[in-house]
Structure formats: C-alpha cells, structure tokens
Image 1 (cartoon, one colour):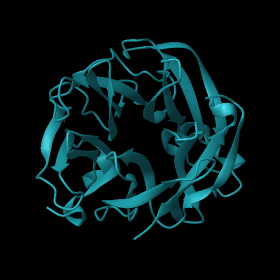
Image 2 (cartoon, helix red, strand yellow):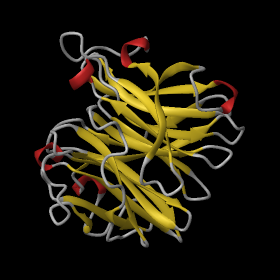
Image 3 (cartoon, one colour):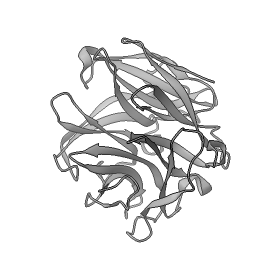
Length: 284
C-alpha cells in the first residue's frame, strides 16, 4: 500500500537491516479506544505492507480511552515502545511497553504511567544522554494547565519507572511563533530529541501557527539537556506536525503527519539536512 493509504497520526520510523518499520496512532476516532497499534514495513518508503498489529491494548486493559503516539527505541538489546494511554483516574500518561521484535507483540512494561499520575500528559519520548542516562521527555497538556509545557524526568535503567523530580523546560507561549488554539490555550505535543553530527542537541515539538499545525525546534546550549536553550525558526508551518527524524545510514529523513484533519492524516517523508548548528527539511 502507498503512504497516502495509511491513515495514521504521529508517525515514527525505525530502520533496521534494510527495512523501515512505521508506527503511529490509528487515526480513526482521533485515536480514542482504537484497540492498540500497528506496524507497517517497507523497503523503500514508497510501498508498505498491510498493517500488522503489534500491541493489543484491549487485551491488556489499556483501551479505556487514548491510544496515542507509539514510538519504538532499541535499548539494551530490546525494543521499548512509549505510548500514551488513559489511566483509571481519567488522566492521560505515557507508559512503556517492551518486545524482543520490532513487529511485536509488545507487552506492558511499566506498572503505570512514567509521567506524574495526577498530571494530564502525553507524547513521552526516550532520550539517552551522552553518559548513558535515560530520560523521558514529555508534554504536560494544555487541557489541564492551559499553557502546555514540555518537561523531562530521569528514568531508571530498566525503563519501567521514573526517578527524581520532573523538570519543566518551557511553556508553549514562550515561543514567539506559537499561537493559541482557544481562549488562552497553547498546545505542546510530539517532542523528539536529535543530536547533530557536530554534537549539537536539538528537540523538535509541535504546536500551532495561527490555525495550522506546525513543527518547532529548540537548540540546547552546550549540547546538554537542561534549561539553557533557544527557540529557532519553525521547521514546518503548514498543516503538519508531530514529527521525528530517522536515518537509513545513507540519507536522513523527517516524517510527520499531514493534513491535520480527521480521517485524512497520512505519513509524509522529507529529506532532512543536518547543518551542524541548524537543522532543516526539504519538502518534495
């Protein structure tokens, strides 16, 4: 099947042994109570397999509401999925799942959310720093705090629990390009960490410019996750977002979903340029 036939939000790609593995939010019903996640496999980013279910959220009691933004990272020889589900208290949070294979099946790994249980959170992404310490970077939702934020927390080595205090990096309104989506509400979602070939550390994240879903970027100072950073010009400002960056060893790509319209979302793939101190994308 072609990418335009794949109706998902929040695409995430892993490249391994000559194949691309694509994960995402099942877009029907905007990702609510969809029963889990699928993986699509391709050799060329053009023709894709039919979806293969890699996690059954109904089977594991996690289909109560949100089934959002699965992303997969290889860590210590296993594959860990980080995805957003709704807790028993009605608040969303990011959980970790684990599998021996990219195609699953993934099984619940954390005993509950890695994010604070009394916070409304989403879109946790794994970042392992230069010394090997794992962190979860995630969003505290505008639905609870009006002005959404991006935060991080240290994880334990087994990736099944958080350690230490949550650090808030910034609120959406602090970015000069981000616009509100309602009465004072500012969105943060889809963070993803990227280290450039020159050692610079970037984070991409999504919000809105006027009424268009958009992709933003910050650059950390000294190449370290922390409170010293600057907002750079947006990567993408026209009806697409929740992106990530991946490489197949010869080329680097940026993937995101577009349009941001229920029922029509599909993954898009652009060439990605690492310019050392800046990053850019080349739209087709």
